[in-house]
Image 1: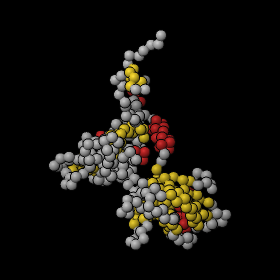
Image 2: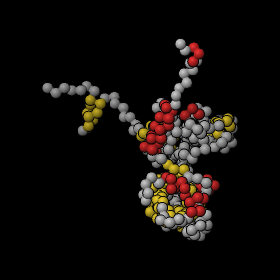
Image 3: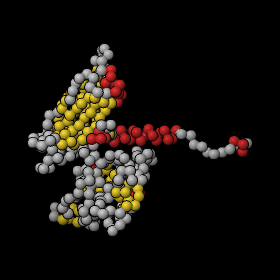
Image 4: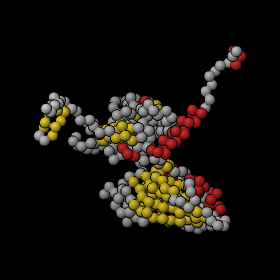
Length: 332
């Protein structure tokens, strides 16, 4: 005789457990545990800084149930820092960049750059970092990661670029091969909400006389695909003081082209990053503003690479001898 489970009831053709509650799906990204949430009040994404829209039956946004970091559903996979509320974060990646928060009163409506909700009140509504101008609630202060001065929001998007440095047989015959593959979440520059992006490459000082080179124009898209290859001749002077500049522009037929993002590399830096001779080295990079792009670049590391760096720092910390503080004069 078959046993009957008293907690199982039949609803049509399905058998369900009585009193069972369906839990929301949890998406784990770098320690963050994101869950879909509908916001009754206006909210902004802490990743791209845009408003979060949606219907009640559909997920309007994602929020970490540990640190309350709020993002779009499309932005939750792009979060680049570990969850500060995790207990196993023994050596945080951002411990050297603390914020300098001070109490501030805001005039126009302002949103928290961590939880995404509005800073309510008539005066002294929240805190603002005096260095990077980040705005947060007082209650969110303990959960804010120490990322002052770090562009983890990817406001201008990201680009996938590959480099291959080839040594020459004689002095001044080295070559630098550059592959511009694709970009994601670039800025919207046209009235239709899209862009016509292309990438312009330039070596300076250009001792070899390679001049400017640029990719094809990707029409009406925010995720362009190019797969264009370029080659630059590297002289001895270029290797010592040369810098490769990459700039993304939005093409316009009538008006002037619009700047979208930039980054730059030293030739020595690209040569040292290459792991094997003659092999293309590809990585995602964040697009920066014009002033920042002239000086440096910000690579985007994978979860595996970040975990390896964390373990390396952890091994260094554990290898430091601990000073017990025992006086040798009192030892028998």
